[in-house]
Length: 159
Image (cartoon, rainbow, N blue to C red; front, side):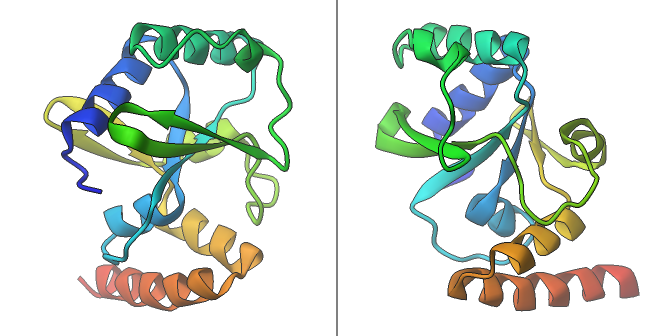
């Protein structure tokens, strides 16, 4: 997946136009921070409020993905649910993040690294938070991500 793919840019623009509060996480955030590994899906942390869910539903409808009334009250089990968005991209939506201690969604959004992608602002989970999340989840691919992200963080600190 290319970060400047038209379907992705349209997706993020649609989220922003509908005031959806989100942070990009997972493998795509890992790539954003500098470790270029393959990922088959897009992971997004959604602020879990009634208003934000309504905004997400509106964004999906406006983007032509469908009008999913269930988005307003569904339980994201086990903390995430998949949808297919433009270009056949699988989107995993999470409403909870492991390993971030007492940090709230708003705390993490305020500290997020924001990319300006052809005029569209996209928040990515801060590298420190991403590392902590991946340490907690601890799948084999997360262990590799942690090693590489820690190297990147060290290089950034040395600059």
